[in-house]
Image (cartoon, rainbow, N blue to C red):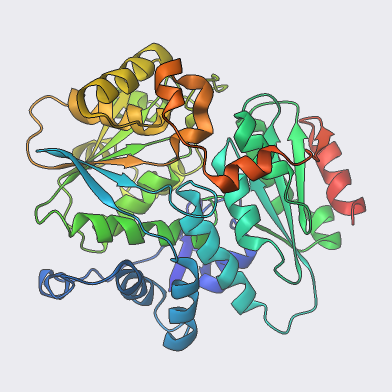
Length: 428
């Protein structure tokens, strides 16, 4: 697999080089130079394949010969140890439940695959690597769990103080070991900026070996294609995927799956009031701005990194992008209204992110066929969002309850790069 930078297609890298660097040296993100799609005949032969078998087939085609079949199969089997059920809610609507992994969020898929890939690439290497992670909620704990105890890896999580749920914060700050949580006095966009700046800072790179486990890293993004293929081929028709969208990594993975041959009728970028992508799709103007805090905090992103990847994939054409992706946004009030309505009608509890995706699918005018609503996190992570009656019916899984009882450990820093730089260089 050869990849190139979104800033300059002449800047190329192998998959391993892209994983190690996190982002290109020119500050761009890596995208495939080309993809070889599966034919309809090949996909027809996947009927009845398990999630692990599907994941192996997709990763084998994407990676080529960069990881030989036997270790790649081990990476897949050790990563995909939990179910990803497609639950039928209504005649035209299914929910893809991505919250059955160790940290009860969709980020477990990419984080576990990446952790094992990094360990494979660096087997026998004694030099420590710092894996930097900016998180608005679930990414941090998923990456921390994925890399916990991995020899030669130090995980540094950056999260915005006061802007994640209590349970999410506890998940990130009670792990210990090789994981350090930095509580940043700012927004997710500040956390993301600090990570990107560190990855290209010459002085930091002299002292520390850096990578990133956000969806800016291709090894975090690529495995998310697995569940698109797994779900899309189950419905038997070209579905519409309604995708909770913040930093746009989940959406980009779906678009890449489509480019690799998965039949998809359309994608819906379902956003909260941080509607940078829907605005671009409507008017053709990309207008990054400070994020606004909402109850769907994983989507509180005002300058989504993966927009650069989408622009590269669609040849910088708004028209081509809008032909495949629809935009939608809603308020906290509308999100709560949707959660209550679905519970009353169907007895199903959506988390805030999944609720926005459900509302987006139902809002689309003239959309027929099958819709797959992506539910990205367990409702128990957002207990404060629900009415008392609904909250009483949500069982907190034991692994979440356990982290609530442990002592929070975090390091508070400002949103200034010099403070983060000093931490990276001097903290051991």
